[in-house]
Image (cartoon, rainbow, N blue to C red; front, side):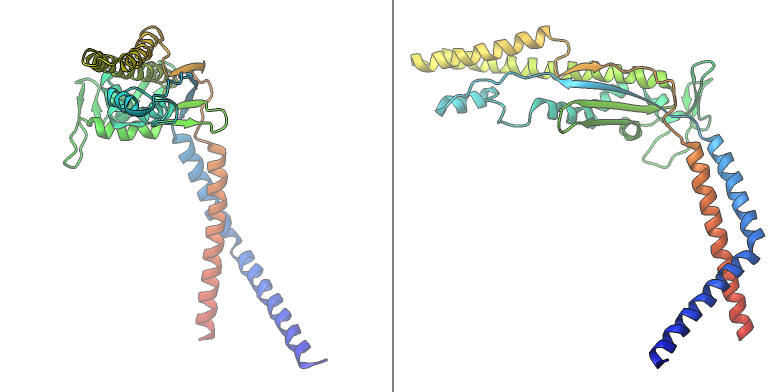
Length: 314
């Protein structure tokens, strides 16, 4: 046998000894490992049972097709741009993308929170009573009997949450996503109350359609007023003809905005009151924490064994 073969056999033998010592150490500390794992398991069960149920409601929306406006060449194209007239799908951000960003904006959500008075259910709610269909509120944050906020917060925040703070909490519950292939838009809200989650989604769809409809109305009215001024000050027949065409396009937009309730989003699948919770996944929580407990205990046993062995050799 060569020297190299001897060294290889020695390394294999050492590895076998190390593994054997490892398993022996774990076996000696098995009761400690079992005890710690049991504590973690019981603690995770208690923790999981104390977590409130969260319900998720969602609505599926289809962007309403927008008609492409005429393209205006030359100086009249610049005039149309000044009047706020869209020159086709290639100019600027498409209205669906704009609507999605408006849905996420502080201004829109802030007005939504204030209009529907969502401060208490967003900030102070901690659970939901399924028997009475009422929210359970944090008594240290909101006094139900007096209707006053009693939170103890550090300045500049006040006892009553501001629209900005409520917006930040609301955005933890609210999500907007758009499918890249189909273009469909999905809104979801997760909350303790399945009824409120569904109700808020209905209101959000209503409000975003109305918001975009009002924007279109105001833009079309301003454009028509500006174009009429230009018609009055223009004597060239070709220019007047083109300006009348622009006014016709804006009048069409004005008419559609007045008659179409689902202006920017058409509801494909309405929000419903969810019957099953979406979280927490209690079984998974218990399994993960139990495994972590066993791993933590095993590491402690090995560390104690190494320290004990080192002290003994010293």
